Image (cartoon, rainbow, N blue to C red; front, side, top):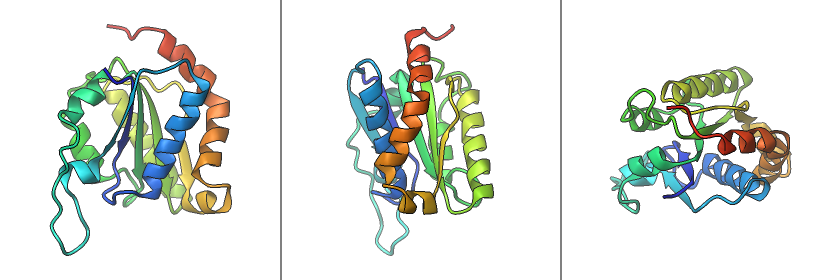
Length: 180
């Protein structure tokens, strides 16, 4: 079982969204009791999405990405804002889970957007979706404007500052077993 899963819903592989998601996982890992293993699920690679002229094919690098998400204790779910909400790619993936299916997980929504209204909308919508799936969200999402990522020391500094404020609450929820 992998205890930490990073789920990236950007249709562009190797995006700023992934960088921020992994920096968040790194920052939390440095501040929490050890978690057993980490897997990064980049949906753009898994399902073969592309915006280019060449067709994309899924990598199949993870035998069952759904099982990895279901078994996660800590789930970092990242998306850019697309038209004011999370990506369709992330929605289609998460729609495969029944209501309450993620009841064993503590989830951390991570959102990147170009404009403040989109940032608020995407982080709220993603939080609502994860709550519907049963995940516990003990802290506010890490919601970052693209301009903040560029102006700050980068994703690592943004994630570290956020983790400094919220790691203790996340640790408290990880220590408590999920309700049946």
